[in-house]
Length: 375
Image (cartoon, rainbow, N blue to C red):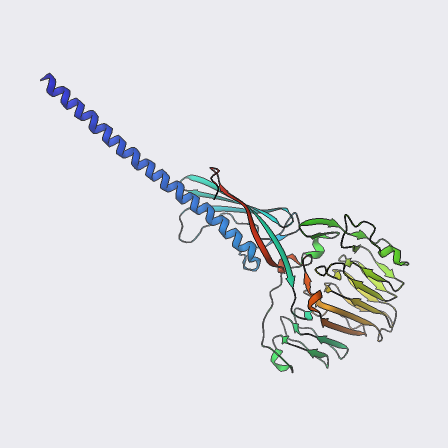
């Protein structure tokens, strides 16, 4: 009897151990499955952020101005990935120009998994037309655009000379190589937002402030090539250019400020990927027979006006005339010529409008999960 009882007890212990081991294996398998699914969900958040960083116009939420000069997808929370259980919180920051840090926190079955990535991005934009506009610009017979134009509305020609492909809602009505309607998508332009700072080659620089009327060419010289290598001159108040200088660099005008031209002004950017003009503010011709020559991309976000007789004045761009806000920026008070000629060598920018710049390269510097396991 004693032997039988010992045998029964031994079988019971073995049965319990077997059941416990089976249950433990099941729990381990369930935990492993939850961990793996949480990792996949967290990495899905990283991949989603990468996609929207590469395709900002597809972002389902408003873009944000990065702390280091890049307009970008900021992330979302809470975020549900179709077909995957659980929930995500994705955050994208811009710790350095051209660098993004992505954090994706996945919550699944009561557990959280965090995935992080650091991405290095280089961006630039090459324009394809002599004039990139928005809305329905009304032109006149003193306007000549050579190299095509694109706008989101209809162009009112009024005897203006338009040569090259015209992309507008009424593009087919123009002669030459006319095209049908295509609406360009343009986000709010970031270049004026960061002034007097600008970003180039992954670094942040400070423009030189012009605080008084320009009476000598010495005021336009680059006095600090280390901190301002592109010689960007920044205007935050109303000033007048009385002489006829050549600026080797870039002229930037803050919104609300105005540069009045009593003389001629030629602008030659130091680098081919820098714009000639960033005018968030206004430009006024206050003397007749004066010329503003921009040999590069000319961003005109303010208005161009005239005072007195301006019939002999000229606003010329060799590169691209880029006016993404307010339609045609030349008011009726300006009676001079407007001439935009496409120059492919001067139509590329890497420090103008971050939102519309295409990505040249995206390099992953790091990609890992909470447990430190590199991917």
